Image (cartoon, rainbow, N blue to C red; front, side):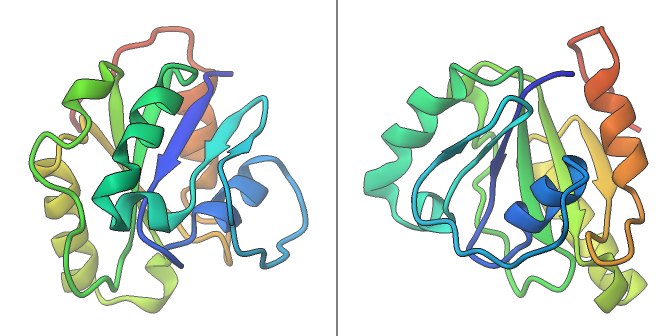
Length: 150
């Protein structure tokens, strides 16, 4: 399985997504520091929200095979600039979370924001219902390291 680094704003569902991908029980935990797991690197939202912490994201990306930009479907704005992950030199996917609490228009907006930010492949998920999780797992288990736009 490819090791994926999750980057996204606070409370967008990175830790819940990681727990679901690992088959763990859903248990809310505020991520205070970078969490290193064999399958994932879970980063605190504050690392994205404070530019002075970007260097920690850049150096941590060296340990990942895939970068996942994570954004909740009902996000009011996009925290990622265009080409945000280019300096990380890794394939980038976009994961829309919390799809179960958003309208189709909100999901479409989040998808477009992630595409503009450099996501080469997009996944629509809900950690609560489990929808879209199998597709993410299948992608991570695929041996080829490139990403393709849907």
